[in-house]
Amino acid sequence: MSTTRSQLRSNEAELIKSVCAGEREAFYELVRPYERMIYATAFSVVKNPADAEEIAQEAVLKAESKFSTWLVQITYNEAKMKLRKARPHLYESIDDQQQTEEGDFWPRDFADWRPIPSELLEQNEIRQTVQDAINSLSPSYREALVLRDVQHLSIKETSTILGISEPNVKTRLHRARLLLRDRLAPGIDGSWTKGQPYRKARAW
Amino acid sequence: MVKKEDRMATIEISCVEVWREISNYIEDEISPEMRERMETHFKVCAHCTAVLDGTRNVVSLVGDGRVFQMPDGFSKRLYNKLQKLP
Image (cartoon, rainbow over all chains, first blue to last red; front, top):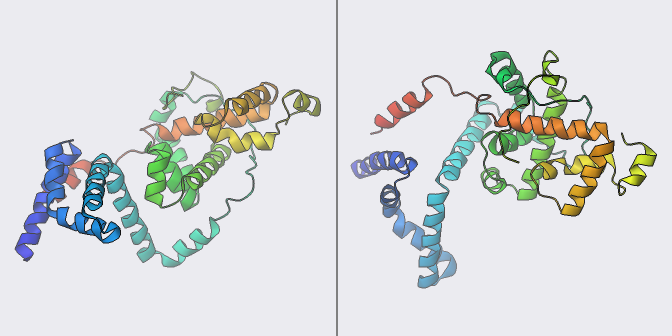
């Protein structure tokens, strides 16, 4: 039994690598051992063979297109679990403080912040400053910002991974951006208010 | 902040309302009417323009792949770990 299981896991590891490379056949092989499981799960809910099959197929198709979301979600949950185990008290207290999303956000800084020269990001000091500012956000804001603005996941994917509604993702993202702006707007040495236009990461 | 007389000329949108919609504006998830009201507001309000530009800069800045760099050898170590699975 244990041999079968470890063989399966070993195959999965190979398959996951292939899936990441975009191989559809590999994905099918990955899913095959679980056909019965997903069909039975769907059947237990809808109690109808045709519907159960349709749902199972849709689930597999979604799983394929959303492989990255699934992987990120597992990673996110793993990280949360680690944090809970390592620093339960800290985790609780931070979590309690972050639910302050009602009411309007008032920016504190109105400095004129012109586009940042792209080459500045080659400097470790600048990168560290940006990372420190992101790290200073409360977890709920930071997580939304990193998934959406750093990793470029969609609002929907971000909402799936965080297990919150899309409007909630938008609210957290909005606050995270404005908070970061307040913290970064003054710049490091004033150089952010001059220089060449910064090339935009997104085409809007 | 917008002066009172300016605010009268900009279809009555306050700075607070503009701040509330800045992200939606950047994401292009607002109605054409709201976009027009905000753009009229930006023309006369330097503070809100600063907030808009700054917020855009934040999104560009954190979205730049160079800000979050992977630890050296991350990919190789992950690959090696996968190879060692029983």
